[in-house]
Image (tube, rainbow, N blue to C red):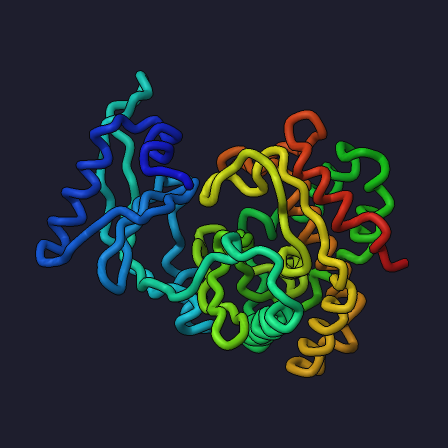
Length: 336
């Protein structure tokens, strides 16, 4: 699993940064027993108290408290209750800078087991998991927002054009269909969208059946047209295998391969049936929502993460695992 040392090295912070963060936490909570989380994320260093956590994040990965508050208002205890503890300035190993700030947050601790640690759940558990996912999305449909300028929202059209010109030609027909549907997609309700719906961020309770009990890491959340969020559905219809990554490291792991479960299409139909039952209005917007789902897959797997820059189109040499996911999730699924 990812370590604290990996986090500090990745962000050009010397080894003593670890003890400085611990000292900061102890100064805020002198009467609490504070320990490092066993698994550390790519973008954060996390400490655990009894029922809460303290998280340190560099500026590029800071959390919008407005988004965190909206997530808690919509989803309740599925999202962590988040507050700021300010910043801590740390020395850096980069020659041109003397200090680097880390933003510090206090969050409620969420229950459950990361989906990334659960392999091949039996069909009844996966149906239950899909039902809980549909319920989460239904809450966002009934809590819409006005269109807002943000990292992804303000650049959807130019990003699609970039993908159309730079991805392998086999994806062009998919992207053309999405481009043609873009006006209808943008007319869907704009909803709070979790920007990193991946197995390590999805907490699951498994008794008596599997349900989503928590969603971690709302740092990439923003308001987007409903349906773009459905890139996350694919993560519940299959799983990644192989690769040399570890939990908490970059996802997908380099060299990993995504594959659908044998009953993926049956489960997909189950999910849509549940969602349409919860939100009847989706029935008349089903085709547009499915095109928005393809848009979500393109945005999340078509651009290399590169530490959060999101400005480089993936290619087979550097990002083979992402291109493999585009092949698996897009080809053959275009609705004409």
